[in-house]
Amino acid sequence: MKNKYNWLFGILLGAIFLFAWLKMINWQEFISYFKSFDLNFVLVFSFFYVFAYVLRSLRWRLIMKPIYQMTILQSFGLFMAGLMINYVIPVRAGELAKSVILKSKYQVRISKSLPTIFIDKISDLFPIILIMILIPLITVQVNITLSIIIAVLFAIFLFFISFLFFAVNHHQRALKILHILLKVIPRGWRPQFEMFFENFVGGMSIMQNRIKDNICVYFITLLAVFSEAIYIYAVFKAFGADISYTQILFGYTLMNLTYILPTPPAQIGSNQFMWVLIFSLALGVNKDLTSASVTFSHLLTSIWIFALGIISLLALRIPLNELVSQKELKEKIDV
Image 1: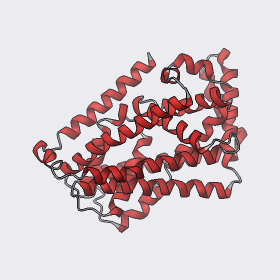
Image 2 (image 1 turned 120 degrees about the horizontal axis):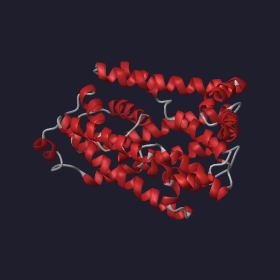
Image 3 (image 1 turned 60 degrees about the vertical axis):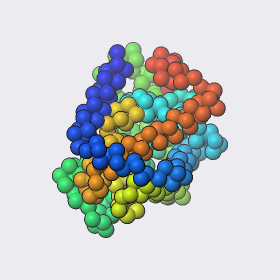
Image 4 (image 1 turned 90 degrees about the vertical axis):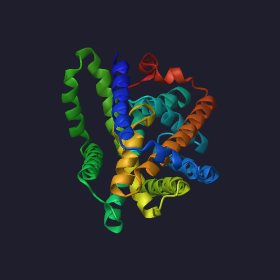
């Protein structure tokens, strides 16, 4: 039942975004941009998009090092499998799926691997600092909507960083708070949840006293952002946009940060609306050109995500239904 509500919420959210986007575009002008579109140029540069995910999988591999030393292929395969599941299920099931695979295939406890995934996702918020630096350097119309988006994302960044700092430096106090919150759970279930969260909070300290690794994590994150921005720059240029790489870097970095928020299945609707909001309303690119760019880019990146995700699942010999089934997840979650 809960899954159905999540799907309905995701579909409704996507429909709202899609409707808002459709009201913005001129279909004749939108279609005209595809007539002079350079397909080969974008296909070549799409490898920078894939390379960004290779970098992010290496970042997660680095975070995981004290718990389990994955090979490069293992980390990339797990990362892409989880990304594909996240793409189609609007409840971040892919993050848990990665932990489930690690347990079933490599006997890594879920309560140990989940904190590394949480830290990995927090790392994706780090470029919000880059956004703050770029605003004065480029021509950006910071309207009220864009200001709200930046403020919300920055607030989320501060919240997660604060939670991470608190859990690492005030371990016992964090556990006391969790124990209070767990009182809403039936008494018979509490011991399992308490033990799980104790292991989880303990796992949050995995990056403590790893100065070089922390620097590498943030350096890899920035490299991934720069790599993706090259691909997006190529997409806009293929459609004839007059826009600088710095503007693209700002726009797509901000766009990437919005993925931390709830998104509809396959990000249909939200991607289109947010691209127009950021690249057209804030950066001044023609909204129909932006719409043509996001439509093509969304299609191409979806193909990459599904192709690499399916190949990864086949290589790992993990059935997809085994990962998205609540029953299977409950059977495999350990404390």
